[in-house]
Image 1 (spheres, one colour):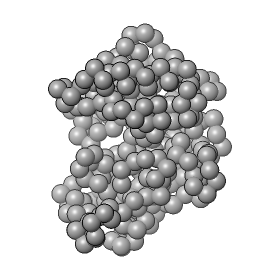
Image 2 (image 1 turned 180 degrees about the horizontal axis):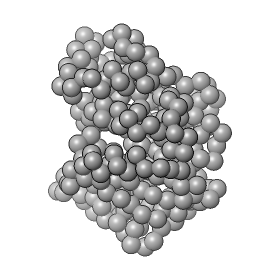
Image 3 (image 1 turned 90 degrees about the vertical axis):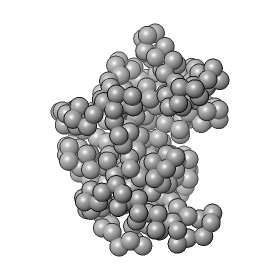
Length: 274
């Protein structure tokens, strides 16, 4: 099975590209073959439009919290919600979300999706540190335009299956130490050691998803040496996709909220570990 893992950015450029790990899975074993770099939307969209088959995990939120969507009176099906949000400029989206937060008490500013808790992810309406709202805004519209299947949310090409991924889900289970920074001055030996520990856990499968990863030495060295961890995050997403590929319904809830979505590999509160 062909597997892809996508480390996403809402503003791809040479210094911060969209990074895609390509590999192949056999059961619980994942071989990473190549890591591709997309420095602009044209390059990324061209890859996304290519025929499959593949199963991929994308590092951006696929949905918004139901509480937020209902409060705003926005559409309550995934494709309609994405289409509506794509009509808004980024500044408009930020203003709407900020107004929602400003009207709420301290300590409860953001509306969370159900999956945020078990995944350990930021609320998808957050526009700073990290700006995942912009990632939702840019990422979901391109999935819809490319005609892929967003599993559980939108039926498209059955040969291209997109799942929501979150690299921190596995990384934090290996080490709570920070392992990346986009600022060169903060790319310390300690963060490099944390990346090395994460790579070692992937290679021997000693992490919650249990997938064993193999790769060439040069690629392994890139994962450890890349202080931004874009390459490592892409591989972590590929691990989530490989884990999902082994499971019925891709390990996602049988009943999934059509505006919130779910993060591949996150525990389901109602049934325990998936």
